[in-house]
Every structure is written in C-alpha cells, then in structure tokens.
Image: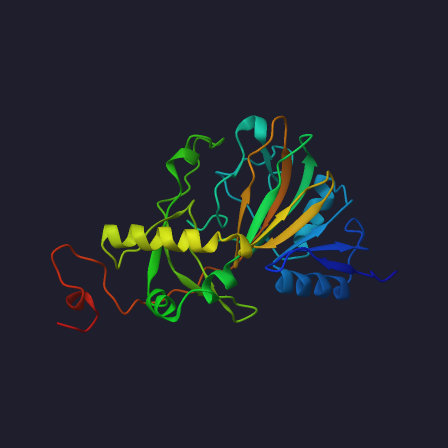
Amino acid sequence: MQKTKLDIRPLAGALGAEIRGADLRRLLDEDDRKAFRRALLDHLVIFFPDQGLSNEELLAFGKTWGALATYDFSPTLDADPEVVELAASSGKTADIWHTDLTHQPDPPLGSVLTMVRLPAVGGDTMWLNQYLSYERLSAPIRNLIDGLTAIHEYPDRLRKGIKNKDADPGNGTEHAVVQVHPETGRKCLYVNRMYTTRIPQLSPSESHALLQMLFAHSEDSRNVVRYRWSEGTTAVWDNRCTQHCVVNDFEGERVIRRVTIAADPLAKIESPWGNYVPGQSSTSTMMGVT
C-alpha cells in the first residue's frame, strides 16, 4: 500500500490546518490514522481539499475515528440514517457560536463534514480554540470558574425544525464549566451561546453576566480561524475543545453532509458551592459551611 505523504499547512495562529496529499477514499492504514489524529490534536480542526466523498465514503472515513453517533432529532438522510444533511433551503444554517450537542450527557468527540454544494460567494465557517479561551482568562476568573458547572439545554427554536415528530432531545444536562481534554490533558472552557443557559451556583444576574463575558471572551478574533470552502472539501474537528459558527452572508443553496463521532459521557465534578438559593448569603451555600 502506498504511504500517504502529508503536507500540513497551518491556517491561523490559534487553530486550523489544511492537509494535502491524502486520499480519504482509499483504505487507510494505522499510520495514516495516527497521523490524522495527531494533526487533529495539534490543530483542532483539519481540512482535506478535493476529496469529493460519497455518503458511503464519508461513513467509512468517519468510522476510522471511532464509533458513530446518531440522534433521532437530527436531520438525517432516509437512505443513510447516520448522515446528517444541513441545507440552507431548509433553514439549516448554524450561525450562532456553539459546540455540538452539549445538551447531551455525552456530547460527540467530533464531526466529519463534506461540503456538497456552495453558493457563489460567502458561507464560510469559523472555529475557535477553547484551550486559548481558558488560558487567556485572568487567574482570578480561572480560579472562580474551575469550581462551577453550567446547565446546557436544547434551544426551543430548534425543536420546531425536528423532522421526526416523536424525537425528544431531552431536558438538558449539567457540565463542568472547565473541562480537561481526555487525550491532551489541557484545560478548556466549555460554555457556548447556543446551549449554555445558566450557572446554577450563581444568582440569575450573576450567571447571565459571567456567561456573557465568557462568550465574548471566547469569540475574540485572535482565537478564531475562518475557512473558505470549496466543494468536495472534507473537514474534521475536535468538538471537545472548539466552537464553530457559519457566516450567514450568502444567498443560494449551501449543503453539507456530516457524520458524528461518539464519545464517552463527560466527567462530572462536584462543585464546592451549592446551588444558589434566593435570600441566602454565598457562604451559607458552600458545601460544609453553616
């Protein structure tokens, strides 16, 4: 089998790389898979131009990263129920910063996407680096959020577009505001505008203010890569330490197809602070303090 000679080209200072010299349609050996995974851990989102994967090839490549996850509330194809199709004509434009499906107890490890159809101009996607989001916070804020959790809920506006009327995306879940990446060991911020609704240890006004600050801090342009697609490009991103957002500046059809890589449930933390109770002082809500 001919060995893959990878040409890895970083795209921005914060994250992102384009990889040339790979043919994702052929059978990949263990060395290929290790090289791709190393590139993903180093760059967080990687792009393979000029692949033109069919649904069958997309599924095969997705499975080289791990078991695939499916969700009955996602807009999957009838012929390939593991493949999600997002088409602008169906209102499927994810133009809010988010990490995929954090309202689940086991958000995906990542996704593999192929660009099927593009408008003449526009329709780029941006990703941001959640390691840097955490590391660029001041020490007092890092100390504060290391002990907090956040509630993640499925937005009501998305429920209206669920194709399967019997599907239930659930009532949300609680995750640590700061996660430790299971492969790199680095800490990353884990809140996003689409799914994160409140921090239960804080009062409503405190929670809103802190979350708005963390969202804006993450979205600093120094923390972002913006990618201009070409049809047939395949991308892989690490959902555990990134957010992404479509630039909704286009007219016409934009179609992507995607498979989702499953992951174990996120590690739980027990906050040293109890949930906020109106009328009680902050010290009286701390565990073990009366």
